[in-house]
Image 1 (cartoon, rainbow, N blue to C red):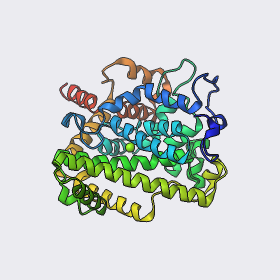
Image 2 (image 1 turned 90 degrees about the vertical axis):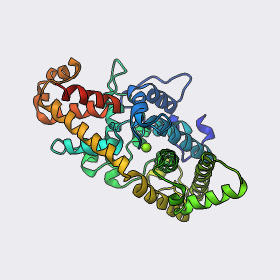
Image 3 (image 1 turned 45 degrees about the vertical axis):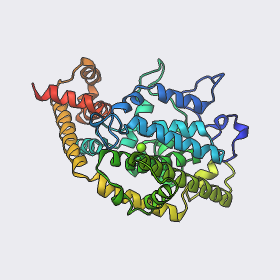
Image 4 (image 1 turned 60 degrees about the horizontal axis):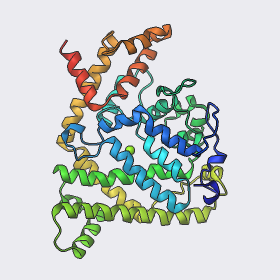
Length: 381
Ligand code: MG
C-alpha cells in the first residue's frame, strides 16, 4: 500500500524512524513489509507452533498454539487497520511477533523462569520478544537480530517495567514519559485480547472444560447465543459454538472500529508523533462493550485458566523449567557444545548473572516438547 493512500496519522514507511543498522531499500517491498517477512522467516516464529497458548500442544491437534494464536491476532489486527486506513503491514508485523518471547508452557513457564531469574534481573516475555528481534536471531552476516524498524520494535514492546525501560534507551522512553505507541501498535495490542478471549471460549468448550451455561453468564456470550439460536433453529453443538464465537468477534471488532474512528475524529492527530503524545489511547472499544469483554475475561480466568486440569499442567511446567535452569546452572549438561562454548568464549560469562541470562534465553527459546525431552534426558542421568 503506497504511503499516500494511508491516513496522515498512520505509520508511513517512508517516514519511519529507521533501523539501527542502515540498509539499502528494497525495490519491491516497503520497510514494514520487510519487517513482517523477517519475522515470518525467523526461527523463533517457527517454534511458536509447538508452544502452549493455554492447552499444551500434545493434548490435542485442534487447540490453538502460539502460532495459530498469532495468526488470528494478525487477521483481526489487519481488518481493524484497513478499516481505519492505517498501516496494515506494520500491524501484521507486530501481531505476528508479539508472542515471540514466550517460554514453553505459556504463562506458567514464564512465571517459573522469572522465579529462576529473580537474582539475575528477572524474566519478562515481552522484553524477551525484543531480545529475540534485536539480538538473539542470527540471520545476517553483519548484525545480530533482525534489525527491524523502530515502529515495529515500539509495537512489540507492549509493556515494560520502569527499571528495564531505563536500559532500553530511546525504545524505553515512552514507558518513562508515559507516551503512547503508534496506532498500529495499539491495534495489535487489542487484537491480541480479542483473539484470545474468543478462541479460548472455542477451545475451552471443545476441551469440555467450559460449558455454554457457565459462559452464558457473560452478557456477550448470552446475547450472541440468543441471536444465533433465534436465526438458526437446528444447529449442532459445534455449529452453535462457532456461530457464537464468529458473532462475538464481529460485534467487538465492529464496535472497536467505530469507537476508534470517533476518537480519532475527536483528537485529530496530525501524524504519528501526535498519536504518541496524546495522553489517551485512540484504539479503544466503547465503554459498554469493553465492560462486556472484561466480564467474559473474568469468567475465563475463573473457569478455564484456573481449572484444575490446566493447573495440573502448570505444576508440571514449573517443575520442568526449574529443573532445567538449576541443572544448566550447575555445569555443562547441554545437549550440544554450542551453548557451553558460548558461555566459555567470553570470560565475562563466568559471571553468574551473564551465565544465567544465556541459560534463560536458551530455555525461553524451547518448544514444550523439547523442554520435556531435555527434562527426561537430564533427570535420567
Ligand atoms: Mg498473545
